[in-house]
Image (cartoon, rainbow, N blue to C red; front, side, top):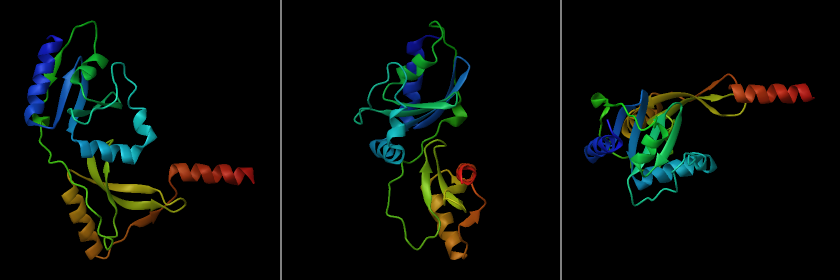
Length: 192
């Protein structure tokens, strides 16, 4: 299959859906089509770390007035305006194999940020690495880091569960030290 045929197929899919998985040259790649707000949330959460996602050849700054694609593959990710960039990363001598995993094609309603209800004891947030909403269930007893999570397909489900847990009188639990805090504590202990 040639590059242009693959691009046309991907663009057709993203004309209707905003989440899909493809296999290009044997590599599975999950792609999410974002809006401006989703990109802003990502950048506000990751800050300087987000800049490191712009490391692939032919990948420039993001134009928020064009389609924005978040792509996961090979334990890495990229954010781009051009599906051509995704194909370029997976290119093998202009030979392409391509499969669209039709069961993965979804339209997920973009979430609108809202002011969190201060009476809810459980914090909910979006995990960009997993493309899902999460509820913090446990915190590290040393550093207060979030350590245990429950994941949800959408924000409404995360909020509903946070409210339910709060109404049931549940609280975020303190768990043993997370790996990073434990190591920092051990390093500090050894120094003194």
